[in-house]
Length: 254
Length: 271
Image (cartoon, chains in turn cyan, brown):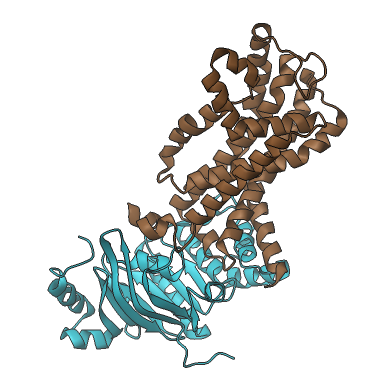
């Protein structure tokens, strides 16, 4: 059904500015199906702007974004239907139950009630929260809420999962759990994942890495590629060299 | 596209809005107590001061309570429209607005759904208020309760669209106090809600002109006439026109290509 030569996500020569401030400059990279791609950048590197563009909160000034071949500008409906998103800020309604939150999201994607019920049960079972379905989100812990948000993002069966700093506010243990969980999804379901973070240790050996700094892509490849290209032994070192060498560059913001 | 998709989307937005409303009991009481305070206290005080002549749609002398009731119904809708604007700002700051906007359905449709859901909530409140007002001798003809429904829909849509359009200009939650001062109060006081326009004219011809241009005045008159089985055609035209204008502005403001986010950045970038 799906053509494997089509990338799950293609970002091509993407630029965006807010007034005089350049947020992104000529950003290009691709994420194939089944890849866990870490978008690495410091705060202010342009990660959130990039996510806003990929999720069409607003359109880019120039360049293109394609999701499984669907152009975000020309075919937003098809493109958005194939994306699941976990935003940086918590976006569950704390006063509604877990199930009500999932139903709301399913409805926004036009899913039928029966389908939502079935998939919600499936996803909740996967994250071990089946018996909490009827409870208000307010009663869940931070880690549980994150997992519910991931479950929600998967409800309409996207092929591309976007996560913007999803481990913010989680302790080391929970951070690892969420990372493991999403890696498993990637492996088992062939889901393409774009995981934005400023935490270098969230990139694992087999992952792809895109280093974004001041709105530009400085490196793109597997962890090993990026290290080799920078002549560094570890990703930490590679990142320091790449960003250090470019910290005097133009564009972006301080 | 599949119409079932659109229907399911609308339904789930309405259900969510309804659930939120039910869960926020304080909000329900506040929305109800506000007009009742006006009716039970303010109207009694003003009754003695304000003489009313017979003006359409009334055919006899009426008590001040009866005059002010349609204005208070409109006030419910005004507050509701602004409240949904507040919830848009809140949603935007908190990020849950984003969950709405990543829906694959067209954005203008999502905004219209949000608007409709808000209007339904305001209509429910308006009827509860009218029910209680019956005990204050505000007793329009029984059929008036049915006739007022389309007026409530139109008025609610217009005020909701105004709130929606305003929400795109409010950057921060705190600015809602500004909306109260600069939108709600002036619109409410410079209208025919509390006193007929001819009464205002006696005090200030200029203010009377403002009241006549104020779309809120026409929401009030729309409701007043409908409640007494009459139609104020001018009001229908003006309220419809304002609805088109405000809804257009809101859709433009939230448009991914032209909207405010593309120019100024999303909520997270604005720190």
